[in-house]
Image (tube, rainbow, N blue to C red):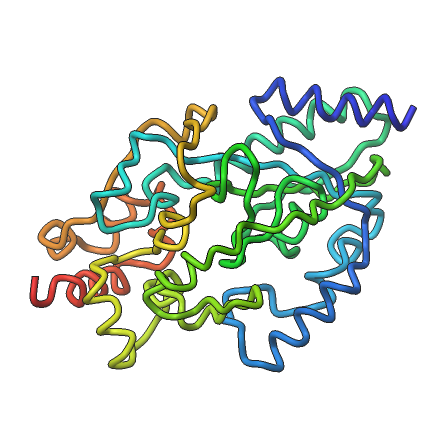
Length: 304
């Protein structure tokens, strides 16, 4: 019966347009715990992550009856999101992926409830308690690049990750232990020099983090943003990766429609917070608020 339900999971995901789904055991993930403890000891955390390491590494801290974690990939790259123009990263050009992913996962969960007795679940994305890229690699959906991005064989690193902690013991998949090309393109191209050769990443030096950081920026951070001209996010490590060459468009319709390429300083300068939320409330960058984006626009437009 367990195998039948595992096939059912795959079939229901396909019904909702999800091509890649894998399963992870309910933990705890001791290897991840050791890794995260080391990262914290080295000061390589931003404060945006879930602060409770036990909660990040043990699904049963979130759902006491957890039997497995179902993990899905949501590719988002399309040729319509021209990487050569714009001042926001590609993942911000689509409507807020958190809402889209949770809605799709909930539809999958509700379909499973109709077939599996007493099935219960909770849906999450990268704002959830667990480490989503770790889950996806462990579920066999991709492997880790030098840049710490998850790389899928078909869709490269342009994938969002969603997961469903649930009370059914779906059969776990084998992890994907492949290596990337290790060509070093991401290391050499990273403007903040955040990436190291040993699959290390200092998130505080990542331009994407800096554009989301509240408060006053350092002189080095300000210069970095000014030179790159980005006001939210950064795609450079993905753009230079050979494994992201010639990617197919996402099959998910919501990520190919209603795209924007950037934010205009003259427009934002006239907006109130209420107007900003009304205009951009359906975009991921809206969560950081009008003030941070106005600051970024002012910095990025200097000497332009």
